[in-house]
Image (cartoon, rainbow, N blue to C red; front, side, top):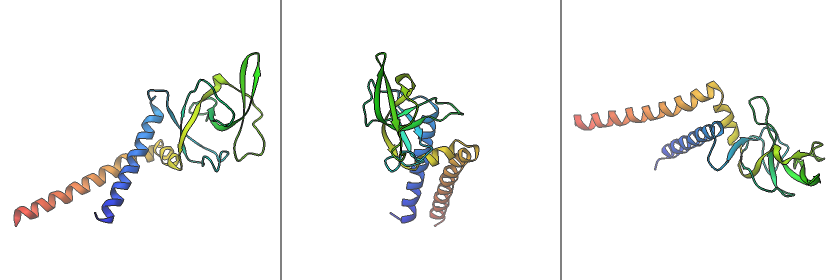
Length: 167
């Protein structure tokens, strides 16, 4: 296989992955899985800034689990940190979290109802592509570039067939 074809398939695969994550970040996925983009470096080196993390609610969280918590909206971004300690107040657990790159634990205690879920895995740097695809220019490029590549490839195939028929 030609190196250019390999690069083409890798590029189309990356575009497809970004498009799928864009769709999954907008629409709910069955099983309560939620992809989210890490917007800060507070969890480095374990989770790099710009990574996509996939979170899922759990029944219990323990010390050492990486959780995502906080309000999820267009204006507010949830936080992804590691559970540093657990306090029980009136029979309810409250979680003290800490980013791996931070010197001290977070000051706010997190109630279980505020937790989006436990991080199952992360994909480094893919969040940059998903975040770009959420913008109008990025969305247009996600559609236009692959379409142009497919159209160009089909035009080349048509010209090859025409040449074969003429000979």
